[in-house]
Structure formats: structure tokens, C-alpha cells
Image (tube, rainbow, N blue to C red; front, side, top):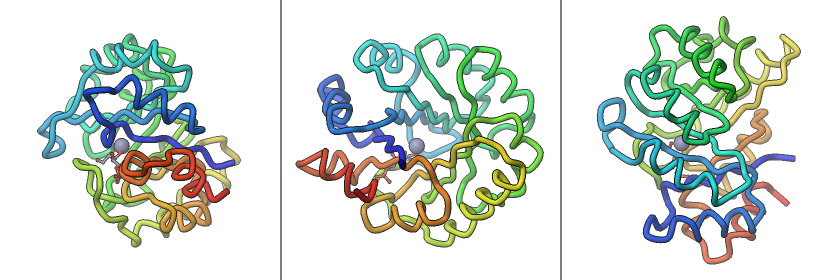
Length: 215
Ligand code: DX5
Ligand code: ZN
């Protein structure tokens, strides 16, 4: 079964608690939290304080996507705030192996994110150490952008890398995922789909989640 991770970036922040409970009741599997620093990406969102505030509101795993420079400096803070998994960008982590070890040391799951233009082979030597690969299908920074179809073959490449090594690593896809683009990701081997505007933009959250999941 495909897992769905609604991105709270598209939620109404004035009632974040209700917005999180609503997607949990509608069948979400993870809560995807987009952390942006205004340096790695051209937007600023939220930090560990918000993760800490969200933590007691849901039983769902908190999937924290760090779009920040110097992720090593903040990993412990996000883990202490209640993250269940932390993903860091290859492009922002020159010592990726060290960064992954830092995440694991805090006891949370570790994942690596690739921007649309970053090739799949950048994770070849780290794939045995991680729990998740997150493939961006938009340039990170904003919700509501269009799905970049040329990333789909990369999903297949990562699927093959995981299967060849007989590993149990999730493939998450993030950006422009909706009922039309989700099947492309699922067919290519994705196991977790992030969606912001395609869920929070709809009146019936349950229908929106089911449509993306393809049930
Ligand atoms: C983009 C974020 C995404 C974004 C997805 O930088 O990482 O998680 O919120 O939003 P949609 O689904 O609207 O593209
Ligand atoms: Zn994200």
C-alpha cells in the first residue's frame, strides 16, 4: 500500500492543529514538514519550535524535510523536537555520510533528498546506510508547482539500485504530486507520496488522499 504524506506547507497555519488532525482522520500515513532557511531555498518556513508544537497533536510519524544549509547544526534540535525521520539534501551536505550518522545517532530514521537535476548515482555509496530516498519532482522552495516529468526515470533508477542490493529503503516523491501524476511515481517504484496543494487545496480530504493513493 502506498503511503501518503500530506505537506503542512499548504495547510492554514492559523489552525495548524486542526489541519493536522483532519489529514490524520482522512487516512494520512505521515505528516510531511518542510523546513526552509532562505539560503538553500528561496523561502523561509519553520523550525524546531513548530515541530515540537505539532508533536503532541498526532500519532503519525513526523517526516521532516530539511531544505537548509549546514543541516548538521540542526539535526539534534529537530530530533529532540519530535521528528521521526529527517531527510537532508545531497546538495547541502558535503559530508553526507557524517550527516547520516549524526541523524542515526539521535535515534530517528535517516533519508537523503535529491533535487530534480541531481543524478541518482550520488546516493550509490550511501544507500546501505539510509531508510529513505526522497526524490524532488519540483525545485524545492514552494508548494503548488508543476510536477517535472523528466524525474520519473530517476525514480526507476533508484528503485533498481534498492532492489539490486535487496534493501528495504522507502522511495518518497515530493512536488506536484496529484491524482494525475501519482500513478507515474507508483509505477516507477515510489512507496511514499508527499502532497501539499493536492490535499489541503481540496474540500474532501479523504477523497483527495484516496485519489492520490489510487484506491
Ligand atoms: C517543496 C516542498 C514540498 C511541497 C509540496 O519545496 O518540499 O513538500 O510542500 O507541495 P505540492 O504538493 O503543492 O507541490
Ligand atoms: Zn517537502
